[in-house]
Image 1: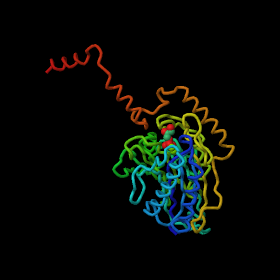
Image 2: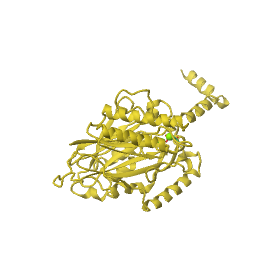
Image 3: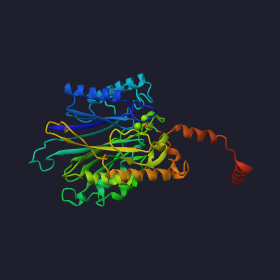
Image 4: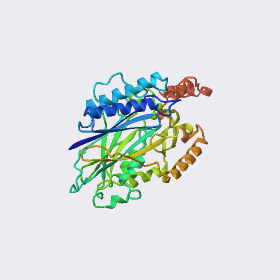
Length: 390
Ligand code: 13P
Ligand code: MG
Ligand code: MG
């Protein structure tokens, strides 16, 4: 069968500031997913939150960008918004940026990542005798939060020894999106290993370029899908963080879970955090963790799934970062966070002017710029020098 995995995620309200959605919102979302399974729109679904963002992970046979699936998600987010509004929660409906998208909700605010593939998990299937995948969800993060970890997991044998195996040695194709381009998706295809320097040159810029998808070059199978978009490019102003999600298939012809998560031990610095305008390390956390740390330390969760022959998820999922191994990384992330917070607003602690997501910061600078005046008549001197040379 041809199966599609979709992750649809939005921040539609949270308790006590932007920390986590209420249990009422979560329950309503779970009920909506159960109802859609009963009505055969979905095969299966799983609902969880990372910080204040609710994510629905669903399987179905309708393909990517399907209007019915996307409209179901939009209506479900509207339902959770109504509960947030009634309870007086913060930021009710925050990520629903347009009034009523007619079909596909890409570009309407919620983060969407989708993977479509042939699903025939039998022992004799040489490519995918079993289907396993992981879902990453990040909160308080800029759009390129996965650039470095996915690059290392799919292109660097220091992190993924599996790249040296025959089924992966031809490498992976990276589709990279220019998120500054708002008229349609602007994509470049680059191949690892031969293009790794070019890939790195783009992916170093987490605010502009993001991984859109990754494909196995030997098998043509899609390995990963990432929601790479900028909310402020949609809304024209700051409305919240981009908080990207990613779907990553693993094992056999793809890297193994341990290879894919090992780059997250870095707790690398990314943009986002408080008011979407600072730089802090990415801390791996268990699923359903609220944001309560200093300066909105960015969080990432990772849940592992298996898919049966009918496209149903395994009864249990595995919460990858809910393990003592990651306690050490969390301490490290906290230490890195404190080191950065030591310098407050200075230099690298805040994003550069053009990346300050909170547009009010730019308004403050603009207001001050208009009050500058040139000292010592230097400008007049320059002007007269120019005019005398004519
Ligand atoms: P969210 O988009 O997760 O609400 O983050 C907003 C923010 O700027 C935190 O300070
Ligand atoms: Mg929020
Ligand atoms: Mg959020």
